[in-house]
Structures are given as C-alpha cells and as structure tokens.
Image 1 (tube, rainbow, N blue to C red):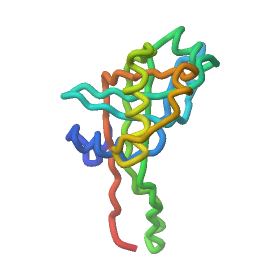
Image 2 (cartoon, rainbow, N blue to C red):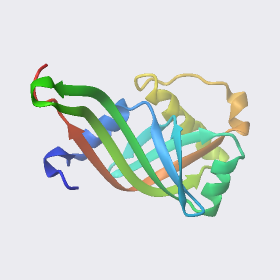
Image 3 (cartoon, rainbow, N blue to C red):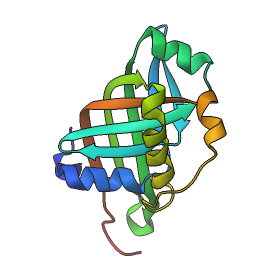
Image 4 (spheres, rainbow, N blue to C red):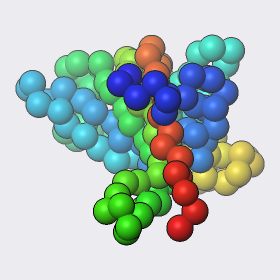
Length: 160
C-alpha cells in the first residue's frame, strides 16, 4: 500500500469496518474482464479465518462465472464525507475501505441456513431474524473464504 499512514493494520479494526458496510462489491473473472456486482453480505470470523456470505438465484451469469473460476476479489467502503478546504483549493474524501480476495464455495443444503442467518444478522445489528424457509431451496448461498485482506482509512484533516 502506497499510503502506509492510511493503512488499517489491526484485523479487529478491519472487521469492524466490514461490519459497518452495507454493500460488498464482488469481482469475478468474465473472460479476462472484471465482472463486478454489488451484493448484500454477511460476515463470519472464526479465529483468523474470515468468511463472507452471499446469496442469489440458483442460476444466472454470476453463477456460471463462479462455476468456471471460483477466484474472486471484493471491496466494501463506508463513511464517505467530502472534505473541501476552499482557501487551499483542496478537495478529498474521508472514507474507510476493505478489499481482498479469496475463493468462493457454493454451499450445500446443510450449510445454507446458518449462512443466511449471518446475512440477516449483518443488517439487523447482529440479531437473529426469521426469514421464510420456503425461499431456501430456491436460493443459492455461497461463501468467499478470504485469503488476503487490507484496510484503508482517510480521516478528516480539519473541521470545516
């Protein structure tokens, strides 16, 4: 990372940023081009292992890409705030971001419910929330096992 002063090195802080994000952008290989999707997600941390869960329809272009090449990159960000210092003509953004990569696994039926629970908990302050079990058989659930991860933070320079 070029700007070491902005790097988040504490894994607990990186995970905290992830838990505050609303969308995870997943990057897949589409014949040599990136195919980027904004997705809802859930996060599970088990020791040093981080897993990001997603769901979708059972079929489609995304599913075909995952089946052809399960390598993936991801990015999520939050806290966007314009910082403009008029007298200096300085304009930038305050933010926090996390990005990384890993491999995707399509989950079997025995793993789906727990993963969907992680997705629901992400958007409900960590609480277990009910969802329609009739949707589970027609839902594909997959996990990105994170192999590399970085975090970055740009803080406000001055109070405007």
